[in-house]
Length: 324
Image 1 (tube, rainbow, N blue to C red):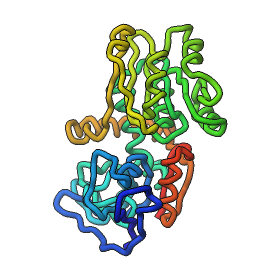
Image 2 (image 1 turned 90 degrees about the vertical axis):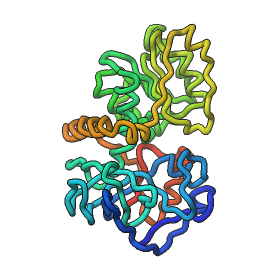
Image 3 (image 1 turned 45 degrees about the vertical axis):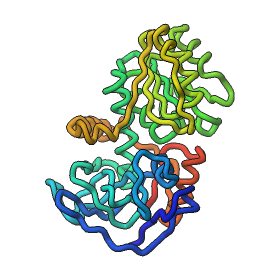
Image 4 (image 1 turned 30 degrees about the horizontal axis):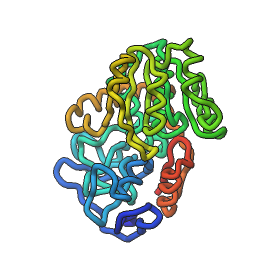
């Protein structure tokens, strides 16, 4: 089968090689799937660089999120059934076939095509747990979403609107501002043109945002502490800026806000039942048409490294999906 392999650590376009590899074999409690679509994620870039928490031994096939058709059944999944999931440690999504542990596979949304189904898992699960499990977002609250036109940011926007929140979205540039407006953001802030702190304060009558969804880190986090409401919640989702902030705990004490971390992968290990419950909720929203993954780019299999490079450079909107 064709597969992309990382043979040394570095930028995706430098270290990924297209090879003819042996088709993987499913072990006990595993599914073998034919890959139908792969959603690229920023962790894929970090794994290629050797900067992610998980460091697979070289060489390895990258790709942490896919939609696939079951070839070898297990755990109640039937041959031919579409599933979404994260490949096992010994397998990667950027190949024609991949292996998934049964516990990391979920039924694909029936009303979404292969590409949108591939992009339905990590972003929406992350946003769901951040907004509902961690921040306990309530109807009528104000939600500030950074990178609102991005992959996980667009999911947070849709889920925030579905929860009845007023959503303020921060983006970088006019094209991304148009995307955020298309997604239903109530107030779009182009960070190149305006100070989102001032905008949030003005829009909320000086109160600030009740919940901040931050997958960016760096200055986005530091400035968010200036416009979070009394008893507000800042959910730290990631550090796409490459800068990990060091928050001043005295500031959180004086302003009476809460800092919340969200590592979705840990729920898969510690509370898999919660992941399954969230998936059921998300399936219902997808069936109702409330959430639809935003596909910004479709990339052919041969161009997968270039898709990752564009994602790393912040040049994309929504999700970048690779089609085998």
